[in-house]
Each structure stands twice: as C-alpha cells, then as structure tokens.
Length: 248
Length: 304
Image 1 (cartoon, rainbow over the protein chains, first blue to last red):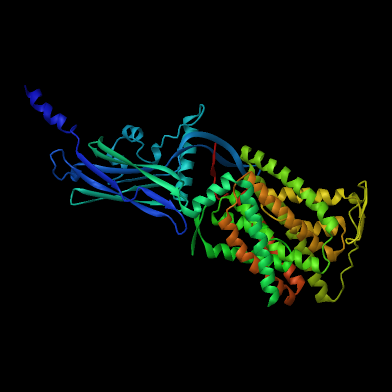
Image 2 (spheres, rainbow over the protein chains, first blue to last red):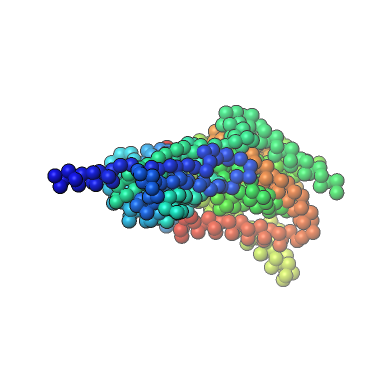
C-alpha cells in the first residue's frame, strides 16, 4: 500500500512538462551586407498542470549545422619545421555547433546523459573512421573544437539561457559571416534532476541568396564561362585604368 | 564597407581588400612585378581560405599587367617571340602545377609546400636584391664605381641544342631555355598565386642574358597570358575564384599601378629596389616564422 501511494509521486516527474519553443528566424540569407547574425531561441516552460515551472527545470538549447565527412590534420614539428604529420578521418563532424544552458552542463546532467544527447563540445559524436586509440582521438577532437571555437563555428555558453518570470526562456546564438550553408537543427531540452524530460526541435535553413547564390552556381556549374568572365573583367579594368590615367 | 564574398563564404571589409590591391598595384607600377607574392599571403593572414586567395590573386595580376604591357609594347619593349615561347612554357607549367596542386592537396602537404616555396624563393631573391642595392648605394657614397656587370647567359643555357635568333633580346640561344623558365614560373603561378615577375626578371637578365630594355616588357607579356591561363585553370578545376574578391582587388591594384608608375619616376631606383627587397624579405620572414616557430593553426580540416 505505501508503495502504491508513492507511485504517482515517482511517476509525477516522468509526466512531460509543457515546452513551447521558437526560433527568431527559420531562414538565414547569405548575401551582400551579411556580416554574421544572431538567432534568438526562445520559448516557455510550464509544469504539466500549466503552472510556472522554470525553477524546476534547466533549459539547454543547441544549434547544429549539417555534419560533414572530413579529414582532420595535425601539424607536428619534424626536422625543424611544422608539417601535417598525423590525421584522422571523421564521418560526422558538425560544420557548426552551439550550445547554451542555464547552468554549466556538468551541474545539470551526468556525463552519460551529456554524451547521449550530445550536450557540449566535449560530447560531439564525430564518428572516426577506422580503429583509433581513444587517447589520440580525444586529442584530435580537442584540436578540432579549439580550431572551430577560434573561428566562431563552435560555441559553448554556460549561463547563456536566460529565464524571465520563471516561465519564459531565451538564448542568443551568434552565427559568424563564415557560417556554412545547409539545414540547421535547433533543439531545446528541459532537464530535471539529471534527466531530459522534454525536448523540441525545429530547423533553420542557411542559404545563399540573390546575386551571391547566382555567382556560386555560375562558378560551380559553368567553370569555363566563369573563367572567361573573370579574365574579361580583369583585362577590362586594367585597360580602363590605363586609359583613364594616361589622359591626365 | 562590409562585403560578403560568395565563393570564400565570408564577409570582409571591402576597403581593406581595395587597400591591399592598391599596395600591390603600386608595387607593380614601381617595380614591374605583379605583386601576387604579397597579395596571396596577406589575404591568407586576413582569413581568406588559401585556395580562394591564390585563385583570385591570379586575376588581379592580370589586371595589373595589362596597362603595363600596352605601355611597353608602344615603346618596343616586348620581345614577342621570346615572350610567346615563355607563354607556351607557362601553359605547360600550369598544367603540371594543377596536377601537383591536386596531389599535394590529397597528401595534405599543400600549405607546407607553399610556405617553403615562399620562404626559399622570396628569401633568396629578396636577399640578392638587398645585397645588390646596398652595394650600389655604397658605391654612390664612396664614389668608387661598381664593376660593370658583363651581360652573358649562363653556360648551361649555351649548351642547349637547337638555337634560335631572338632579335629584340639580342640573343642566339636555344628556345628550350625560355621554355623551361616559362614552365617553372607556370608551376609557381598555379601553386602560389603569383605572377612570377620577381623571379622572371632576374632570370631573364642573369640566366638568359636578355638585353635590359626588353626584360620588363617581355616578363609582363608572359605574366599577362600565364595569369589568364591560370584563372581559366582555376575556374575549371578548383572553382575557387571569387569574382567579388578579385574585382575589389582589381579596383585597388589598377589604380595603385598608375600611382606607382608616377611615383617611380620621381624616386631613386636604388632606394626603390631596397624597399622592394625589404618587403620581399618581410613576407619571407613571416612565412618562415609560421614554419619554424609556431604555425597559426595546428589543426586543419579538409572535406573528405
């Protein structure tokens, strides 16, 4: 009997809180004037009963760009000069990854949960190809993360999620101008007592637009014409400048 | 002025790029070199992907050399016969360069090779130029004239078979010599994004032994056609020419080239050569630092 009474209490945590999520823009257009932008990931969290709930939950938001197969090379000093000496191949390196949370991830979930949900740069699932010594893999992964953090393509902001009035949360996530094109996934997790109790995801399309899109297509699909155009532009400008200045 | 570069996939300050083009354009106006040796590394330091930088720099060199070729040809400073042999060599060199580029890229050693080439070539040529101009300066100060340099070609050139007469250059040598020189600079153009003027001019003077009044014009003529061919090669193989980037560079470099020409007429050639030597050595030194001391990035990523 006491057990039966306890049961609803235990299960109560498993009942999903209400998580409403939104992204400020679902399309990011790369074109003249684009110097990077900021996405606002926001929403509300309520208990299953509809009460304000934010003090009970931690919110974590992630934004992930398309994954690519890449070769990651490491420079080492050999015979006095730095050359690419070691490399690993990764099947699923995200081209962009940002995470923001209400508190440091380590305080919210244990390592296992963080790894399962890929919460944090430490837990990116890079899927190396072939058998690789775990220590070496960790070194390479740290190198990739450091490189992309420096480029602004990987971001981790503990405390980046702000909560208002115990119900509304928001996080600003920056995209640099070098943001790769593709379909991005924005995910929001509500976490309570170390467990993910609710999540929601939506997509953001990053694409080239207008003239920039036309130029990229022209270069890729009509290489010969594009090359002729580049040559014509350079010859014409050189010739024109010669004529203009010669008249002075 | 922010400009988004559609092929390089990033946004840059357009005025910085125009300024960069202007500096290299001035160099080409003053010294008759294309300035690619400066543009490409500076763009890479600025954050533009190396392949895009090298590909787009080639068209900038084309623009900077056009008006020079016209001006030189009006005063009879181009040996078309010699120039055409070198252009033929250059086109072969571009083909070889493209294959090498591809191979080195797959091996992951392209950046190291480019850096080493920069350090070795710029270091040695900058050093030679600096030594020569300092000697000339000293000779001017002390009043003791320098021993006149004998104009003759390298003995290896004299040994090549099948001689042609190159009237304007005042030479009776095998066309294989300029052809090989052309191939060599063609490879460098493709790999380093440079016109190769700073290698061609001394090589034409001291290895081929061409008469000085056609050296600059003929080298510009060769550079003009070889950089055009490089642009085409990049357009067809690497697809890495950013026409927005190239246009910005061109605006700067074609005006810079004209300013440089005017500046050159008012300054002492020895001082100018010393300045060029200093710039060349500076670029070489910066590259050497990245190779020997600590590179900018330990880890690099390439698509599989």
